[in-house]
Length: 202
Image (cartoon, rainbow, N blue to C red; front, side, top):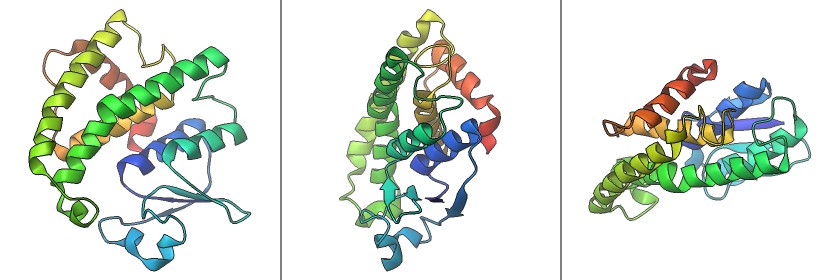
């Protein structure tokens, strides 16, 4: 098994997942900005030219960060990050989707429409990115209300892949200088909890 990864948001999700579970596999880090994912050889791994990619020993390639995490969770069930019971799994899935749609997604859209590297991937509309900045601020405020019950992490008081998705949003936010609005004390509490985890710098 070999993981093709990078210093980028979705690879970050898998990298953190591996680190949290203590899984060690062969890894190759590619340079996205340097064009590594645009090379013909990489097209054989992922026709969308995206990372991460998990190459299995039988020649199968898995893409999409959550799909890769789900596969690894099944192989390495210790320290579960996707739920140990049906209810936990459902709540974590719910919060993973919420974070993807409400926080991580807008962060990614802003990057796609403002970073010059992506000009050949999409038709960039900087004005649309500005609307997403305003929407993201509203979505952070929504999350603050959801966390007002005092729980430490997103799905409950146990850290999960939903929090890893949130960490990826923070990764993008730092790169794009997208600041969390002032006054969101519950979001700040959650942010401090995930940034305090040893894997944050891994």
